[in-house]
Image 1 (cartoon, rainbow, N blue to C red):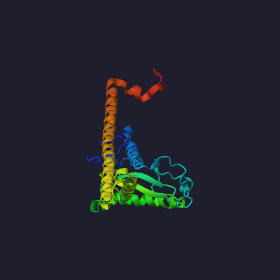
Image 2 (cartoon, one colour):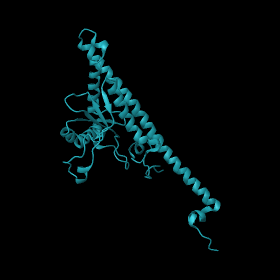
Image 3 (cartoon, one colour):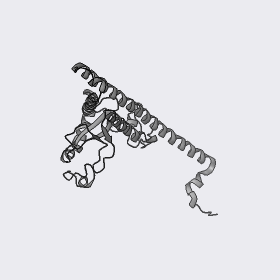
Image 4 (cartoon, rainbow, N blue to C red):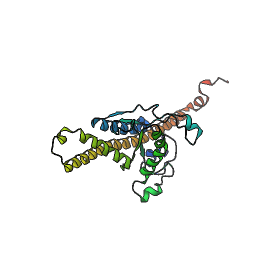
Length: 253
């Protein structure tokens, strides 16, 4: 069978193509997957008493030192602007990304490093994002973090460190915790519990997004098959000449 989005021949039946195909956006599954992880990350930040916004246009501007000429005139826009997390900078800008362990759409071969090294795919993506945004963010007095997660569940280290920072901020604002006598053990337990809770919330969104990606791909294939079957039926009913000529057909009798 073929992909209902891009038309490529499917060579596997495990959903790898549905995860990777950039044209598979039925039910806005590709965009929504990204945006829901972005939104839950902002919600977590706000619940800790901090501010977050997805309006990041114009904060970084164009990268005048970019290697490619076309990139020197294009505004680089992050996904989230976190405020209050690191007071020493104007804000913490973040880019949310999801990476599948199987690269590309054809052939479906696991990434060489990911096959032997756990977390290699998400680590590589973190480095690419840092190279793209990090130096420019530094020059604009912002911090930058790459919030990357693998479709199979592995969080990038920067994502985990970010959640720990947010949990620390939540601990500082927790009245019940602060009303107790100083207890390092209780503080650590609170932070660890919060991080686990944050990761579960993000993982729920990630898994739902995977299901929607698969569902969208299946719908696309079914839609194309129904369309092809409908066309074949019309041809069988003698509408072939009319379909071929279309509305511009003329009577040549």
